[in-house]
Length: 319
Image (cartoon, rainbow, N blue to C red; front, side, top):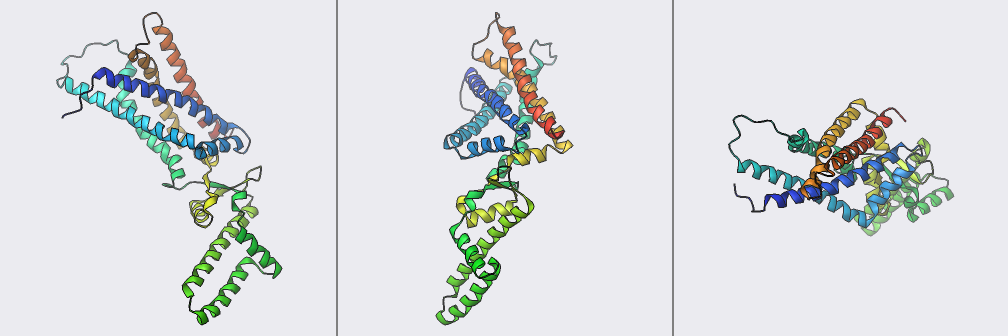
């Protein structure tokens, strides 16, 4: 196997720098998750998610983040492979090592974290991309379509429902097209009106079932099909994933909560060694404050993972 010639220490420095960035991101992510615990009908958390999903700087950062994750995985695997190739024959009698147990598990905890990360993305982020189905919400103000309002006003003036009005337009249009021979254009016009009617029915259903945020600015509990309808009929509406509801609903199931807690234990084991290891690789560690860095790493890992775990546990308990 021929791999590009990059010195081992260079690969370790890349792993340390990328890992350090991801450690900081985990603290940010864990802190943001605590917003779910506010009893405000998801106002703060939804506002945070809206900002993260609509700000162009954040979108660039999102690409950088996934790029760093990919590079961290790549360099770690590369380093592991080259180390194995450097000693194809293992020791017959392994001796006792002073290496921290977490160091020997880094590759395996990293693989488990990658698998869990894919599952985590499929629970939430992939719903944003439309790759899996989720729950969605849309701003009420973005559904104020001029043609729809005119249709409602006309129906009210004629003491008809919007659906009856469309049926009458369709019947009248059929007679007109027989005389003028432009059926395709008329059919498209009627189809557009029926799409608008479907949106009005969606709004009516929201009013009847009370599917609104407390501030009445968002229609919630939209399905994947509802989202597709709105994006086709009113592209500017741009429905967003209702991450607050999705988090609350997901972690209300005991088996999912347990799976995530196990995930956080794996993350803790990985972070527990990664923190001091990064300092060591970057030459920022020595015997004078090695113990302090190790303790700081433990505290950091405990704080981040307990913040993640607290969100899952408290949501499961309905708090």
